[in-house]
Image 1 (tube, rainbow, N blue to C red):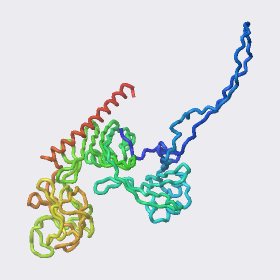
Image 2: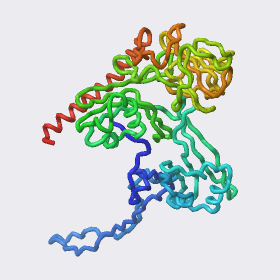
Image 3: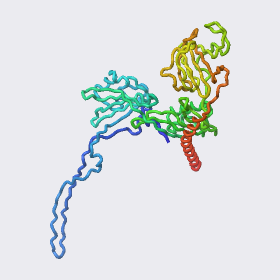
Image 4: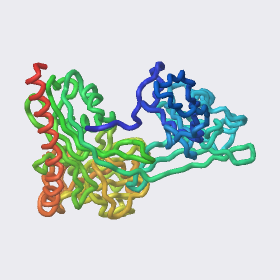
Length: 462
């Protein structure tokens, strides 16, 4: 049902992966095949009948007949070059790649290893591909190194490569090329026999999609201990394609996993007030609504409630929690939300305030600096970088002051019962149900296919 990017079959060298069909396009013409046929009338011994009637004399002749070519399509001249491809393996050199591609161009190796315009080939990434196109005389037409088969810029998938061509003066020229990759949706299904990766490999599902499956359902299934033979899965996911070849995978759009006869499902959805996440088929978020801490490694230096202010010396109510951490420590959003304020506020110094779903909001103060590109109105995801620990405003040293609010009321983030999961409501729920209907149709189709396969296997005795 699905294919992986860069389809290939291993050669005798398991580290060298070549396409199952070498992409050779024949050039040059084949002359029309002329078959010279000699036609002769044999001299026959003529036996005259009793009437003695003379038969006409036989004449011996020969001629060359031009017959049509048995391969008329080969009579034309093709301009397409021979194209060969190889995949980079650990320890490879540019010289080894050119040798495998049968490229023998004087000066090319020196150009690739010394010219600044070709500097991206200085770093060879194992698993990436290099292609070479040769004409009918074996001369180089172009060389391409796909150093970044898939990247994302402003949400657009791109394929980027280095292209080298002869310059017509016994030299070469190199340029960086890019092309917007086209996004396609694929569906796949599989059954666990021994491991998740074994099952997804058999179903031709990319490893990046397998990792997403495990991450999305990590709070539901322990993929190291809970899997059982016979568990089944169905997945709808994105792939990126450029120049007719798969260059990478996107995100999972919908997923259903049957573990120990219990079904777990997830679908990607982007609510109006966040940048998107995974929800089960009932519209509940697949992750906790809030993290307990905005810092990964820290300690609480001041708790919520009354205290003597370290600068002013007066006794006042501390409306948040302080986390001591070295200056520059990354600060992460504790939940999906929208930036409602970013800037400076007196004692808070550099501060970010996030508005979350419902009446929830959080505040992150005393920052040294903000994450690049973050501004008022920006959508952020849970765990996304929003800034760095500092000591701006009324602070005696580097730390994060974190506040959790419900409506206009400050509550202790260390003791409050945080919402376990968000459930979509209102217009978001209607939009979710519409998107879900399409994905469920694909999931149901895969389920029916699996049932048919199981029934056929049962009838055949396997």
